[in-house]
Image 1 (cartoon, rainbow over the protein chains, first blue to last red):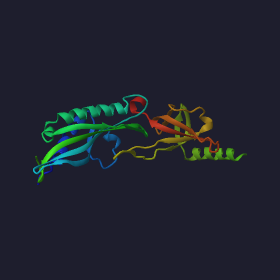
Image 2: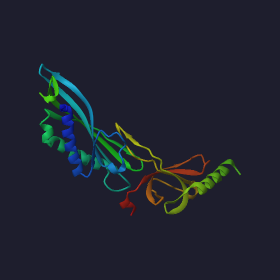
Image 3: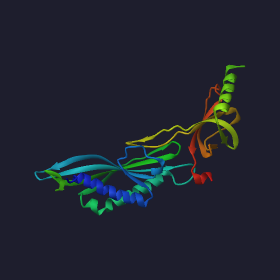
Image 4: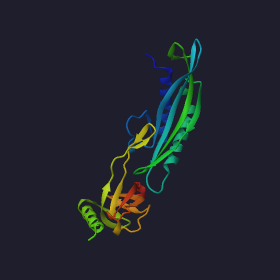
Length: 149
Length: 106
């Protein structure tokens, strides 16, 4: 049984992000279900959000998949790299990898950056959480979401 | 003896019996140390974290402020905020801590 094009996109995206995270010394996690441990940060997260139909003809359906890539970093104490800077550098690497991934680009019609947010909190250390949202447009056959249109 | 004085003595005795050795701005003393788990909640994701804080006797720690060095259980922290009880009843000041990393502590 084949996976949907949506899942194939997410898998290609995961592979690209895992590579980018690994090169940056970070952990990649798709849809984390448990709190991130201290050892798992810095981390790059993939959070699929929504897959919406944009346009439909008799044969093909245009869809828009919204995903959020999140860079998470922590920093302790008075000196060293601020966590928002480390998370930002991780997002730069993720963005570059996203738009350079041949397996991913072969599955999609386009990738558009939507917005980025910042959230910084201090607990025992300061952590930065930078989510960047992307919309990925792709096309499937109307009758089979596992077949590209 | 006023109620406030009595309460301050009770606080000091409780800290002495139940507390943890610590150093605040170079002064060795006993404090109440709390490092309870507190997940840092972000949109859709949380991080393992804790809220380290100590309660110390205000009278022997005058002028505490953010940035003061604290060591508890061989872990180095800096004070993020100093929160005296303000009423003079407990005679305690709560210090919210942030952990220093290993290279800074060294």
